[in-house]
Image (tube, rainbow, N blue to C red):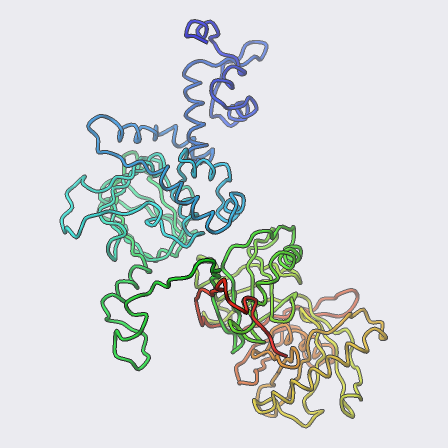
Length: 635
């Protein structure tokens, strides 16, 4: 259609506008309802569009599709004419702007493919629309700072890793305007890199148009200093009330804190922004040989002091994990993203894990990378809670685990995933539990409000085990046979563990053999729980998982079951506490939060408080020619 034909169609119909702009008619009507566009209307209600409106539609579409702006962000951008900045940067005589979208998008695509992730999976993990990610990878779009930070964090990178760095070649002086200009860091934002990815600090000058913003909160590793040179700069940390900084004001904070920013003023804000990269700091320290892990060796003599890179042969698999221990019992938390874990609930996601990834259970937990009692946790997304978790062990899958939940909370806090929050909800196969940090006056305490716990059978005689031996069958997220070690004239001490493992395995086998004939609705018990009431000292508790496995921790789900038993016997009431310790003398604190009922049975809501400690952050390796790629477990 030539220009004359086009003129004959003025004012344009909605169908014609949809054709020339690529925005469908239903979207145009939606934008009209949201006040973004105002087409003319005839007395009969027919919409018509002029040239100015079409140009506005094209601009809105660019802000939405290329830059991923929200409707509110589009309104602000149009009101403040933020799109002028990019045009100014490209004007004759302006500083040359380095095109970034193509290169960074291709870099992200390579990282995604290397990780084996689909666009949809990256979208789910970052909150960036899959369509926007696709355009970004093709170089047709550029995400906002908060979204780019989320993408970088997913692949364990920093913004500097994605944006690239400078090449000052050690020159100490950088003249004004001679830095590396990043002009496509979202409309309304221009970044001049002074020195990035070279030394311990990344230094940049940001020019932020009025109304431009980060488009949400984000966080990353390191620390940062912000100094306002001109204009106004608004900063909010961890959801707290925003502060407005003026020229000469500064802010210094840990980058793991959730932060967002914007220019609330009527003039551009110019900000000096300095970040530190913890990984680069560690690398520089290693190069200087001023710090070394104390292995009773001369400084700098370790085999890893000068070469921290490991040359892996072709075909290797690697799995990143964080290890913790809760009162001595390990939890290995997988932090690699996994495909194929669809499902409406965590229980359904566990079914998919068993179907697609069960080999990882033995690979991560069995020898030689683990041992018989190593416990694992696989984080998953939850549609019903803040987080989700699948519990795996060397021998089975569990519905709930107290010590594992405490370990996971410790890791979430250490990774900065909780921000300023001190509590969160966690969906597990057994249901949804509440987790709180810092209860009872100590920041190290982690408290679980567990699933309802109750007694299935108050007393079961086990003469085949020993004369006078009895067990109660109680549920606390798993089924336990609770047995007094006094029935065997034993104490819960390290020297008795081997004997108690043998007895616990026999009791579990005997109870499970009897259950079908009891008709009480319990298919099988999971473990045997031995308890010891001690005069003038805390009770002790030891859970035997199998003949060669025992829980080193006091066991949170076992303590929940034990408290349900004590409440049924009238020895414990709602609001009271019950503190126990493991075979090593490390305590858990139990509390009966409330009474409840499960299918007509009296039950309790238990709270369990304990502590977990970080013990490792590592990459597990499986070489292609490893004769034992899945590990092994000798019983």
